[in-house]
Image (cartoon, rainbow, N blue to C red):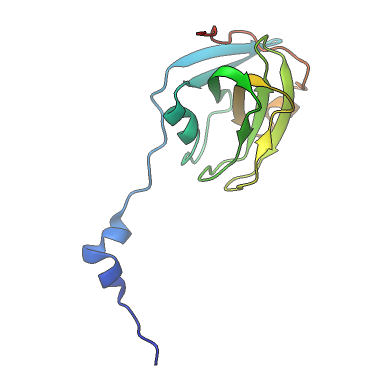
Length: 149
């Protein structure tokens, strides 16, 4: 005989139904990057926590915005889309601003997407932003934050 456990016992006082999803981070410092004649306003994810949360839990992002992940040192950087609700493209960017490679990433996908060589920066934008502007690996981003080491 199977025992059924009431949802009320698992979620006292309807706490589960009323739980709010985690809030996206919207208050990070900002910068403007350029690539060719195109500009993109980015939030800067510079700490371990900011980089870990990234663009999780957002339902949308304006067309000319993104998030720039800034690492202390170049390394092979790998990203996934856990708890990320919008399709993104990641641009893996070397110290000199050159885009090393691009990776399209699907919402909620836990497969990893990595830089093809060590990079200090990763720029995430809405999927299609690079393609619509005919921007690709080998092109250079300007306006990157200066290294702190």
